[in-house]
Length: 120
Image (cartoon, rainbow, N blue to C red; front, side):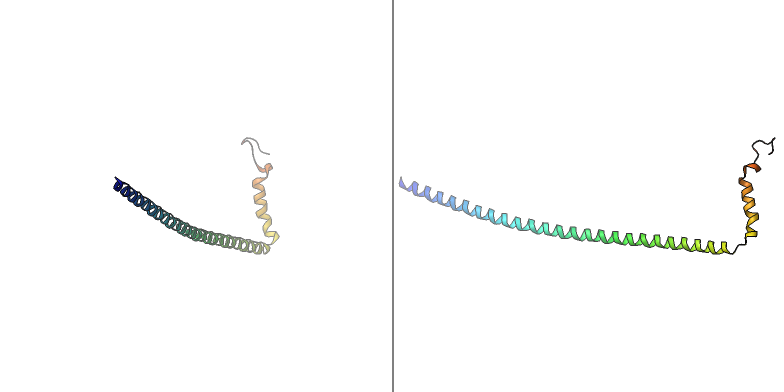
């Protein structure tokens, strides 16, 4: 009957060795998975940084384009205003009087008729 005890001890030892081997494999797999996870996190951080950089560059370009467009519009308006001022400076006062009178007559309430049968 002693033989079964030896066999049981060997089986128990084999079982413990197998369990320890599995634990070592699990620990190795945990380490490998942890390294992979850290690698993926680092890659995602790099990708995010690149995307943010692209977005910022695009924003800066749009901003610069908007500023240039606004600057061009302002320059055009200033040029037009200067041109109008230059032309207005050359008009004689005597030639403006009839034009002003015509426009004032159109808005002067004394020259307007409220009712067709009554005149002021």
